[in-house]
Length: 364
Ligand SMILES: Cc1cc2nc3c(=O)[nH]c(=O)nc-3n(C[C@H](O)[C@H](O)[C@H](O)COP(=O)(O)O)c2cc1C
Image (tube, rainbow, N blue to C red; front, side):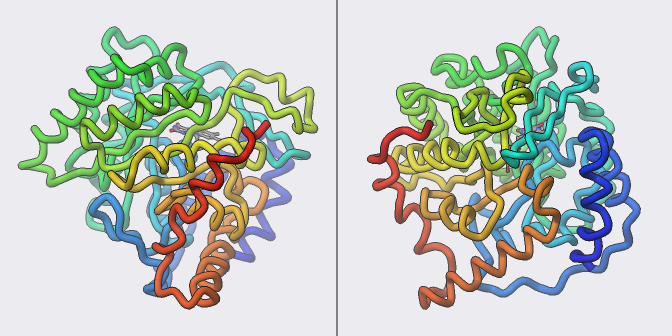
């Protein structure tokens, strides 16, 4: 079934403008009758942030911004789906074109700018699917023109806590001017204090919703020292490493498109994001687990992320080039790695290469 979807849809999708292709994919997923998948092999199960993931491969934020297709995506084999980024009020985002494929590099550049339907629309959709089960995280962000960005996050925690499996506090999108300044020590300290306080306030009616912090791969290591220290101080449940990069590796072949403003993802992000993951892992000293994301497009890249320190994984751009069959392929490769290593889970791989990776020269 999945192979058939891939074979039929990929040539068509690649022929379309990238944003039109995305809109079409979401529509198709909404109306596609998909059977519930067979239960996953228990070896692929992961427990993290107080949640039981049936498998460790999640869909990263930005694909299903408005929670229109989460159940279809879970049925296609993802272990969890992160919707959003959602902002309190609906916003249109930046003018088109704002999404670019770097085909020769298997990369994507986007400067969408948090286009989304706003909290009311997304809340209604999540409430309507609440009995379906499955892990659906809610990635939250501030409106571009918000007079008090921290207040936007607080309000979104209060709104979504009853329907969110977890929250991702996104302070790392490069496409909302000034948003990434929330990663600076003082601003982050204040933001996390208020976010965790809001989470505690809603706990009695919503249960213990984990809060994860999603960071940019472009932080300096001294920024990262501060960020991890502050995340530990406020006892966040985990971190996601990381978002798209505003840097452009020298190896990019699509030089013309590389000049487009926005965040780069996909294969050209793999080295930088994996290094930042390892750097984050060694700083957390096991205080909380990490989600590794950036350039995963095979079993080998997924395993490298685990060894760099990820307990759970996410991907997005790899789907553009490999299709939805990528998820099943990675799961099969992870199972093979578990069996070959005579392990009963992925846990022993997590972080096994992190210290060595941090000693290598910086990826360019
Ligand atoms: C088109 C597009 C839109 C994205 N939108 C968001 C978003 O709204 N919020 C967010 O936290 N990350 C967003 N991301 C970043 C992804 O969640 C992910 O962190 C990044 O793409 C790296 O993973 P990948 O290389 O597997 O794509 C977006 C990425 C892409 C390609």
